[in-house]
Image (cartoon, rainbow, N blue to C red; front, top):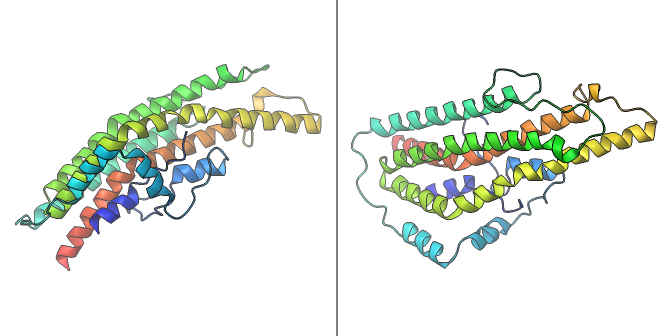
Amino acid sequence: MAAFRFLRFFRFQLHLPMTRALPRTNFHSSRLIRFLADLSMVDAVEPGNAFAEKLGLWVDFTDAITLSAVHNTNAAGPTDASAGMPSLAGVAIADELNRIRTRLENSITKSGSASAGGTRIAFPAPVLELPMDLTAAYTPYRRYHAAHQRDMDLSIPPLRANVRQALTSASPALKKLAALDAALDGILSDREEKLLAKLPLLFKSRFVQLFKAHQQRLSDTGQADNPAVWMHAGGWLARFCSDLQAVLLAELDLRLQPALGLIEAFNQEIEDRHE
């Protein structure tokens, strides 16, 4: 059951080119994929066994042997005699996750507007001029997105490793689960990193889409364009900036899912011990 709870959270969908209570989420969806699907940037996730089937395409024969060996490892063994230690470890790793999540969320939301100042990753100053070179105008936003991805890359893998270490020390069953996570991480991390690295380029289509829709509305109404109002409420560029912040928060949520799943399994085992 612990492995199933973890895999429910390990749900990076293969369609790409939170609360503090460690939420239970749908196995067949992710906030990121739902958001991109709503913007018609990727296909919606189909139900059934699609996730397992596509995950299988990522796992070759050697990887399957590795996962099988971990899965077949005997989890029997003594539980830590100190009943308080696992509980304390659970609090510590949950606190670490909340601290890292809050810092990364604040970095995105506080820099997620052109008026924000004093943030480490500065939001790009919008180009408010015509005619607009869409490629040149989007480049700063691509770099901004990539900078936040690097920030996540520096913070989340060490967190996940610390969570695995806490599980390893808690019980034989959780030690097996940590080993499964480490094996999956080793198998899938490179491919996942390459897919996520495409998001800043993929999101350019949203930038272009909103600008062209803005131009079409002006043409339909016979109005002249005014770059000075692009960042006003309801303006096309203000909407893009809001979407960019939303996709970054959704990506953060996705990247945290494996650690969240491990912590949920950890907490469930502690609860089971006390029943």
